[in-house]
Image (cartoon, rainbow, N blue to C red; front, side, top):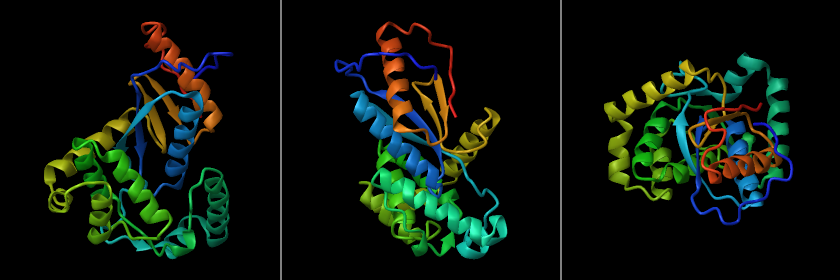
Length: 237
């Protein structure tokens, strides 16, 4: 997004701006990025709604997942892994997020978690479920490959347990997740979080709340002016 200086915060804005978040529930930057977005929107006094789209950081991960320490050591080295965890803990605390990486023992496959998010989206509960999954994984160290964990998160998000259980093995939902992820990659999404604002503007990465405050004010002003400038999608990050 380009900056527009002195753009007023549209207090009269009543229609929330929709934001689609391409994300993986085991991505620490995704939780941080969403929190920064929410803070920026609150500071700009602009209502938003979040919906969640799938992206697997580890698409080849076996269904049962892997030992996290071994996986991370092989991927980036134990020292680098520890340094990144410490940095994420510090950044998360700035947004009120409680990262507890020492509690994590498994790096899970998130294929079934994404199917559950897709099911929740049809009920208008995907934002609540995404938040529940983030907290389960990053604060409690829960294994998101465990159906019991997924169902507990579904219940926390207000979903019916029996329907959520069926959704985990719903082939139509699995196909939908695969199609949406393939579409995201075809559009050039290679990392997450990736945000699509009002179906027109793209912002990548866990951008600061200050950037979101300015970007949302600019977008709200354009929408209020009847879409002036729409179609000129901007990116940041």
